[in-house]
Length: 186
Image (cartoon, rainbow, N blue to C red):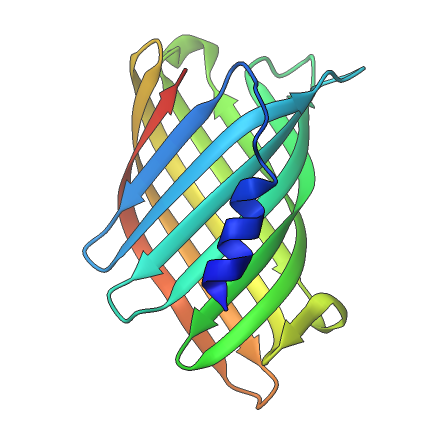
C-alpha cells in the first residue's frame, strides 16, 4: 500500500522552488528523510510543502505530505517562528495500515544571543474522523536542539514519537526515542 501512495506523493511535488531543504535523521532503529520547499508566494509568511519517509528496523514505514504556513510569531520575541498546517500520513505497522490527516504546527526559536543554536517543537494529531483503514487516531510529535555548523547546514539532536491508534483499541508505537539529524539548505 505504501509504495503507490509514496509514488503519488512524490509525483505531486515536482515543483521548482528556492530555499529548499533536506532533513535526514537517524537513530539505532529508525531513519527519516524529509524534503521541504516553498510552493507559492505568500501575502504573509512562508507557504511550504514537505514530503517525508520514515522506516524502522521492525519493517514499519510512514510516508507523509504536508503543507505549512509559517512566519515570525511575535515582534516582541525576535527569533521565534510559528507555523500551522496539516500532514497526510500513510503508515504501515505491525500488519496494520493507516491513512490519516493530521492538523498541527511547529515552533522554532533561535535566541539572538545564541545565533547558531536553535530549538524546535512540532506536533500533528489526526482524530478518529480523519483516520482511516485500521486506525482511529494518529500522533506525530517531537522536539530538537540544533547548531548551525555552516550557513546552509545544521546538526541537531531530537526526540520524536509517532503513534497509530487502532480500531481494536490498541496503540502501535511506530517510533519513539532520540535521533541525530542533519539539515541541508540549498
